[in-house]
Length: 410
Image 1 (cartoon, rainbow, N blue to C red):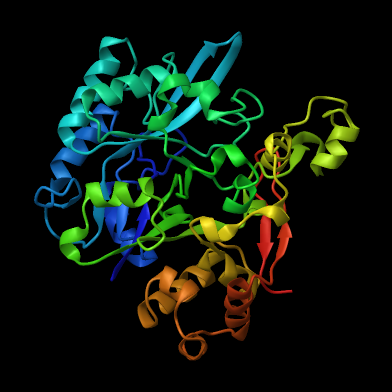
Image 2: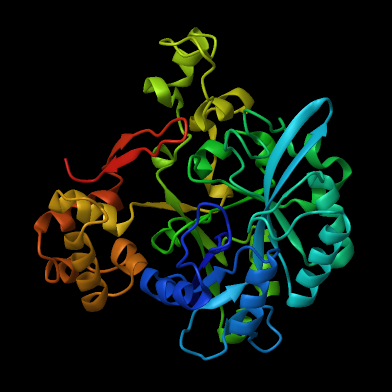
């Protein structure tokens, strides 16, 4: 079996608040360093980025996957984008981000033409904002190609998600109505994990995927999906999507997860007042900040709790795709060395480990501990990796747009 680590959701340099280094050759190189085998192109609705895609990539046979034309990387690419739908539905303003995955360039071109016909500004942002409903977008992609895929992005984020506390829905059916059967997966996002999602019986038939939503090269693959294929010829768009759609645990092996507490919307809170509280406390304060009395940003944990109809102890994990938690290697090194994650010491140690041991995912999940021990400058790095693998971490939850912290050495 050939294992493939797949990140279906990233952005380009043309998306707001994203690194100018996010160009395809750089992404391909960074994916090799990370251990990501198949990566999203991101942002295919943006004309300049689509031109970059067409100039830099070529399809691998008739697989629906792409690679650099100069063959300077083994990284494969899949055509995907995130769009932002802001519209009124059932007397409420809805704001949803949607991940779209296209089977080929022809489908992308048709989709972009349909958006342009409807007056959508595609030049303004890599993640375009439009007044079309989620259901209308789903109708468009189905009409273009039945293989076109829609996955609600970071499904629980308060401000822009299908289940978001600020402008989402209480069910997929409420959002997509009679077209709901076309939605076979949702993206958990950084602030939730599969266990949280499985507290909702309505999601029992929905597959959970995890992706990085990366806005910079270093964040590529911070969440990902791991698939198993019989041979190289089996690695193509159709089989990849069918692995997800069929919920086949023999082929969809597991997802790689952030600890959800590290996500920036896990707890409830009000950042201006440094208020970071659990749902039980928020409800006591009627979702108002206990310091300034303004409305709290209701986090993912609270929202899941509101919609859940199952206790965590009653979840039968045997039914679902497994998952594994990671802490990014740079964060472990940073904690071990007692310096900032962007420091030269962290970068030097990271590069040393990659060159001597292997890619980041191999180091975090598979490399023998004695091999790691023999190729690090500080023993605390080994302790951090051992604790991460064993789930022995200290969790400080994020809230109201502020990332949390996972401590592996304490």
